[in-house]
Amino acid sequence: MDFFDRYSFIVISLALIALGTVFAFLTAYGTVVGTVTFLVGSAFIVFWVVARRGALTPVNPAKRIRRGRTSTRPVVVCFYHDFNFGSLVSRAFTWKAEREQKGHCDFIYIDAYHREAPPVMAEYEAEVGDWLLFDAAGNLVEKCGSISMEKIEVLRKRAAQ
Image 1 (spheres, rainbow, N blue to C red):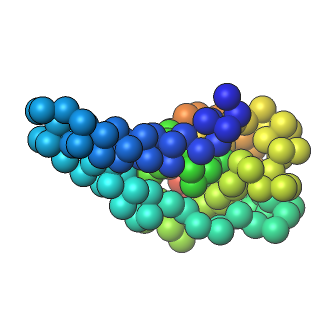
Image 2 (image 1 turned 60 degrees about the vertical axis):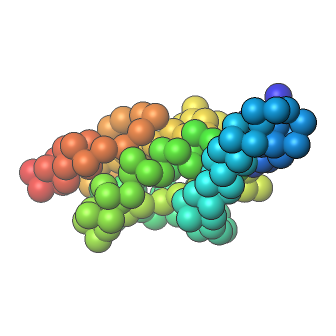
C-alpha cells in the first residue's frame, strides 16, 4: 500500500492510459470509450508535469523551519509529494493563495519522501498533504489539510498586531 500512496498519481494515470488502449482495441464500442479514457490519462500526465513541485525541499528541513519561525513573517509549511494524487490535486486550489502571499509569508515545501523529512513529520505529527501554519512569533497556529487565502490573512493579521 505504501507504493500506491507514494506513486498514486502515476499509477492512476498509467492505468487510465492502459485501459483506454485496451478498450480501443478489444471492444466494439471501445473506440470512443478507449479514446476518452486514453485522453483523460494523458491529461493527468500533462497536469502532473505542470503541477509538480520539483526539487524545492531544503537540504535540512528542520533547520529551515526553525529559521523561518524566528523571522518576522508568518510561515506556511507544506508536506507534499510529486507523485501523490492528493498533493497534486490540491495544487490547483492553492496556487492563487501562494502567489498572492509570496513575500508576506514564508512558504516552505517539504517532500514527504525526502531523506530528512520523516523526523520533521514525526515532530509535528504530519502526513503527506498536511499544512502547518506558524504565526510571526513562531507559534504553531494550525495543522490543516489545505490552505486558503482566509487562513493566510488570519496569520498576517496576527503578525500585524
